[in-house]
Length: 71
Image 1 (cartoon, rainbow, N blue to C red):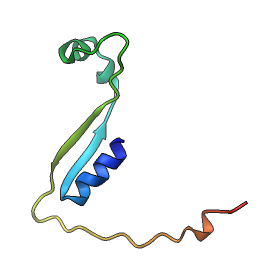
Image 2 (tube, one colour):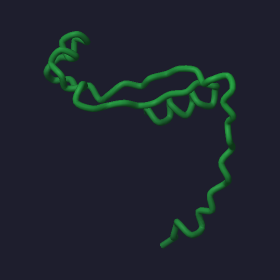
Image 3 (cartoon, rainbow, N blue to C red):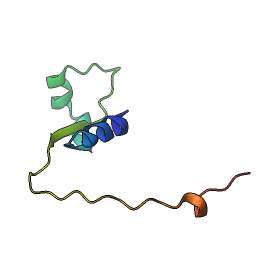
């Protein structure tokens, strides 16, 4: 879901990055956010805007023929 949301944001001109790490399990963070013992915090999705002067490069299409096989 996070990947899909990130792609959607990027397609509408936003930038985003998914972050996780030790902070998601820190007792202080869990308490501040009201995370119960049976709940799990996975990370944060940071959303922002791209710099106005950023040049967006289009990616070349990927040739999947050498990467996929059909059984």
